[in-house]
Length: 267
Image 1 (cartoon, helix red, strand yellow):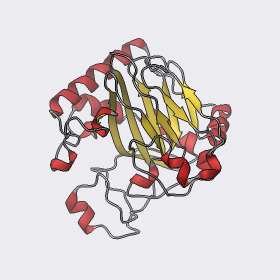
Image 2 (cartoon, rainbow, N blue to C red):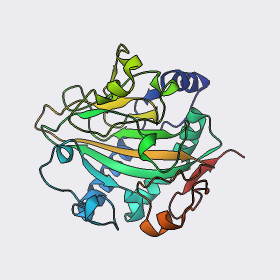
Image 3 (tube, rainbow, N blue to C red):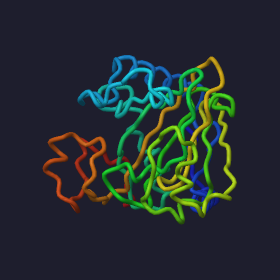
Image 4 (cartoon, rainbow, N blue to C red):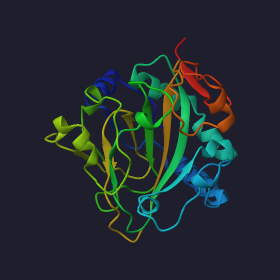
């Protein structure tokens, strides 16, 4: 794993809100990530979360279900995924890039764009989640070559600096987020094609999306969202278990390792 982080990379990330790391995984590591993700997705049998209600099950041929196949928190019910997601080297990378004190897993998710899949509209990540932070960060690992033809990521560089926590859903209006942030209308987007085994990190307030899949092949990616250690509950439900959500009060520390494992912390 290419896990060294330089000051130059930290500076680039802080300025632009994202960074691409080519050949993040070795060929052997890539095959292991592919194997574990494929197994974990298959055993879910259509359930986005392992132990959730029907609202978390794929609902058929809708626009959103053709944006990507989404499977969340695979670490909770697949031992191989747990080993991959609990790698403290990745936690260290995320912490250093974000300038945080430490990182916990918020949730992992496989994002698999199907053949002829719909584009992923411009959006922000953090406003969906149950904590509020300008240091939240996500990892996105290409398990297949991610190209302009099959749905690579795009970023609007620097938008993490001026983003508030207003957002839009991932719907059919590709540019809906620009109506919320009209000051971004003239920002030039940056395409992020990646070879399989490469990755990106992006700030949870950096606007990003993905192109449509214009090919008959699948585009697999494995991602993980990280919550800075010390984050608190903001009152919003996302992927928290119902019993946990009901007992949390706004301002409570989100530090339960069973739900949000701590990966790495500066000592």
